[in-house]
Image (cartoon, rainbow, N blue to C red; front, side, top):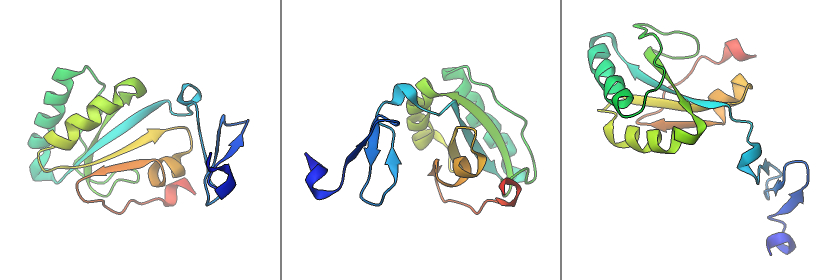
Length: 139
Protein backbone atom coordinates (compact mmCIF):
# COMPACT_ATOMS: atom_id res chain seq x y z
CA UNK A 1 0.00 0.00 0.00
CA UNK A 2 1.37 3.41 -0.95
CA UNK A 3 0.14 5.12 2.23
CA UNK A 4 3.61 4.80 3.81
CA UNK A 5 5.14 6.88 1.03
CA UNK A 6 2.49 9.61 1.25
CA UNK A 7 1.07 9.07 -2.22
CA UNK A 8 -2.37 7.94 -1.12
CA UNK A 9 -4.51 9.03 1.81
CA UNK A 10 -8.14 7.90 1.83
CA UNK A 11 -10.75 10.65 1.83
CA UNK A 12 -14.14 9.31 2.92
CA UNK A 13 -16.00 12.30 1.43
CA UNK A 14 -14.67 11.57 -2.05
CA UNK A 15 -14.32 7.80 -1.68
CA UNK A 16 -10.97 8.42 -3.32
CA UNK A 17 -7.89 9.98 -1.87
CA UNK A 18 -5.24 12.65 -2.09
CA UNK A 19 -2.23 12.67 -4.36
CA UNK A 20 1.26 13.59 -3.18
CA UNK A 21 0.69 17.18 -4.34
CA UNK A 22 -2.36 17.45 -2.06
CA UNK A 23 -4.94 17.32 -4.82
CA UNK A 24 -7.78 14.88 -4.40
CA UNK A 25 -9.19 12.39 -6.81
CA UNK A 26 -12.59 10.72 -6.97
CA UNK A 27 -12.37 6.99 -6.39
CA UNK A 28 -15.87 5.98 -7.45
CA UNK A 29 -16.85 7.41 -10.82
CA UNK A 30 -20.44 6.36 -10.09
CA UNK A 31 -20.47 9.55 -8.00
CA UNK A 32 -18.77 11.62 -10.68
CA UNK A 33 -19.62 15.33 -10.85
CA UNK A 34 -19.44 15.14 -14.67
CA UNK A 35 -22.86 15.72 -16.28
CA UNK A 36 -21.64 15.34 -19.87
CA UNK A 37 -18.78 16.38 -22.11
CA UNK A 38 -18.56 19.09 -24.75
CA UNK A 39 -16.41 18.47 -27.81
CA UNK A 40 -15.75 21.69 -29.73
CA UNK A 41 -14.48 21.40 -33.29
CA UNK A 42 -12.37 24.49 -34.14
CA UNK A 43 -12.12 25.78 -37.71
CA UNK A 44 -11.52 28.84 -39.81
CA UNK A 45 -14.41 30.20 -41.94
CA UNK A 46 -13.11 28.42 -45.05
CA UNK A 47 -13.13 25.08 -43.18
CA UNK A 48 -16.75 25.14 -42.03
CA UNK A 49 -17.87 22.62 -44.65
CA UNK A 50 -15.12 20.26 -43.53
CA UNK A 51 -16.23 20.72 -39.90
CA UNK A 52 -19.81 19.99 -40.92
CA UNK A 53 -18.66 16.79 -42.63
CA UNK A 54 -16.72 15.63 -39.56
CA UNK A 55 -19.71 16.38 -37.31
CA UNK A 56 -22.07 14.58 -39.72
CA UNK A 57 -19.85 11.49 -39.83
CA UNK A 58 -19.68 11.48 -36.02
CA UNK A 59 -23.43 11.83 -35.60
CA UNK A 60 -24.10 9.11 -38.17
CA UNK A 61 -22.29 6.77 -35.80
CA UNK A 62 -23.84 8.14 -32.58
CA UNK A 63 -26.89 10.44 -32.48
CA UNK A 64 -25.45 13.41 -30.57
CA UNK A 65 -26.70 17.00 -30.29
CA UNK A 66 -24.73 19.35 -32.54
CA UNK A 67 -24.84 23.07 -31.90
CA UNK A 68 -24.58 26.07 -34.21
CA UNK A 69 -21.58 26.34 -36.55
CA UNK A 70 -20.10 29.70 -35.49
CA UNK A 71 -17.87 31.42 -38.04
CA UNK A 72 -16.11 33.64 -35.51
CA UNK A 73 -15.05 33.41 -31.84
CA UNK A 74 -17.90 32.83 -29.38
CA UNK A 75 -17.57 32.67 -25.60
CA UNK A 76 -14.09 31.51 -24.61
CA UNK A 77 -13.36 29.92 -27.98
CA UNK A 78 -10.65 31.60 -30.10
CA UNK A 79 -12.16 31.01 -33.55
CA UNK A 80 -15.08 29.39 -35.34
CA UNK A 81 -16.42 26.35 -33.55
CA UNK A 82 -19.29 23.96 -33.08
CA UNK A 83 -20.20 22.19 -29.84
CA UNK A 84 -21.12 18.52 -29.79
CA UNK A 85 -22.61 17.34 -26.49
CA UNK A 86 -21.51 13.83 -25.49
CA UNK A 87 -23.03 11.74 -22.69
CA UNK A 88 -20.54 10.50 -20.10
CA UNK A 89 -21.06 6.85 -21.02
CA UNK A 90 -20.31 7.58 -24.71
CA UNK A 91 -17.31 9.90 -24.30
CA UNK A 92 -14.62 7.19 -24.45
CA UNK A 93 -15.90 5.97 -27.81
CA UNK A 94 -16.33 9.49 -29.20
CA UNK A 95 -12.87 10.57 -28.00
CA UNK A 96 -11.27 7.59 -29.75
CA UNK A 97 -13.21 8.33 -32.93
CA UNK A 98 -12.23 12.02 -32.87
CA UNK A 99 -8.56 11.21 -32.23
CA UNK A 100 -8.44 9.32 -35.52
CA UNK A 101 -11.12 11.05 -37.62
CA UNK A 102 -10.88 14.77 -36.78
CA UNK A 103 -9.50 15.43 -40.26
CA UNK A 104 -6.86 17.90 -39.11
CA UNK A 105 -9.29 20.03 -37.10
CA UNK A 106 -8.40 20.96 -33.55
CA UNK A 107 -10.84 19.50 -31.04
CA UNK A 108 -11.21 20.98 -27.57
CA UNK A 109 -13.10 18.61 -25.28
CA UNK A 110 -14.00 19.25 -21.67
CA UNK A 111 -16.09 17.86 -18.86
CA UNK A 112 -19.23 19.72 -17.86
CA UNK A 113 -19.38 19.79 -14.05
CA UNK A 114 -20.95 23.19 -13.43
CA UNK A 115 -17.58 24.84 -12.65
CA UNK A 116 -17.03 26.64 -15.95
CA UNK A 117 -13.52 27.89 -15.19
CA UNK A 118 -12.26 24.46 -14.09
CA UNK A 119 -14.10 22.79 -16.96
CA UNK A 120 -12.26 25.00 -19.48
CA UNK A 121 -8.81 24.83 -17.81
CA UNK A 122 -8.37 21.66 -15.73
CA UNK A 123 -10.95 19.21 -17.06
CA UNK A 124 -9.83 19.36 -20.70
CA UNK A 125 -8.45 17.24 -23.52
CA UNK A 126 -7.03 18.65 -26.74
CA UNK A 127 -6.87 16.72 -30.02
CA UNK A 128 -4.43 18.61 -32.21
CA UNK A 129 -2.66 21.78 -31.12
CA UNK A 130 -4.10 23.57 -28.10
CA UNK A 131 -5.23 27.17 -28.51
CA UNK A 132 -5.53 29.99 -25.97
CA UNK A 133 -9.03 30.51 -24.59
CA UNK A 134 -10.56 33.81 -23.41
CA UNK A 135 -11.26 32.85 -19.82
CA UNK A 136 -12.12 36.30 -18.43
CA UNK A 137 -15.83 35.58 -18.69
CA UNK A 138 -15.48 32.89 -16.00
CA UNK A 139 -13.98 35.08 -13.27
